[in-house]
Amino acid sequence: MTEERDLLERARSARARAYAPYSNYPVGCVLEADDGTLFDGCNVENASSPVTLCAERGALSAAVVAGRRSFRRIALSTTGRVAVAPCGACRQALAEFAPDLEIVSEAGGDVRRWTLSELLPAQFVLDHTGRRAAPSRDGEETG
Ligand code: THU
Image 1 (tube, rainbow, N blue to C red):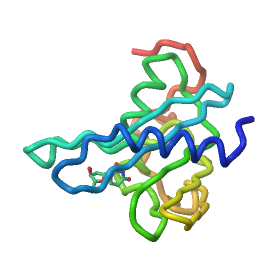
Image 2: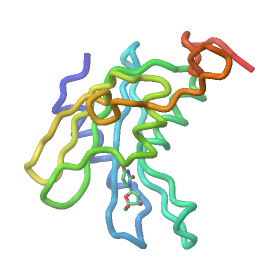
Image 3: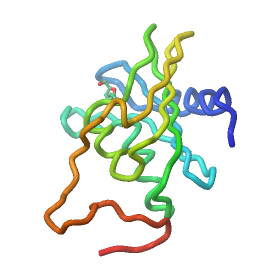
Image 4: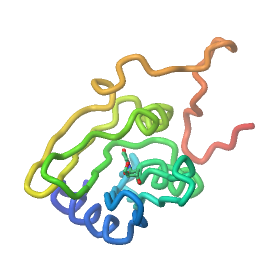
C-alpha cells in the first residue's frame, strides 16, 4: 500500500495541473483502488461555473473507465491553510463505490483525516429495485 506521504505528494503534483483560473483554488487528488492502482484528478473549471468538474469526480471517472469500482483511500491537496473535505456532490459520487473510503487531505502543513461514512452518514441509494445501485465487482459490465 502506498505510504500516505507519497499519496499526498502525488495529489500535490496533480494540483499543479489543475485548471482553476476562476476560483484560483486548485485542487489535486489521488484515488487509490483496492488493488493499489492510483488515479489522479484535478479540478477543471469553466467560464460557465456549473460546468466545473471537481478533482474527486475527475479521478473517479478515470478509475471507472479503467475498470476499477472499489476504492480504499483518496488523498486531496489544496491551497490555503485548512485542509478541506470533499464537497457534498463528490461525497455522494464516491459513496456509490466506496461508502467507507478513507480520506486524507492537506493544505499547507495542515493534514486532516476522515472516513466517507462519517462525512456522509445517510448516502442516497436508489432503492426501487430493492438492491443497491452500485455495481459490486471490478471489471464487471452492467447495463
Ligand atoms: N473543488 C474540488 O475540486 N473538490 C471539492 O471537493 C470542492 C471544490 C473545486 C471546484 C472549484 O473548481 C474550486 O474547487 C472552488 O470551488
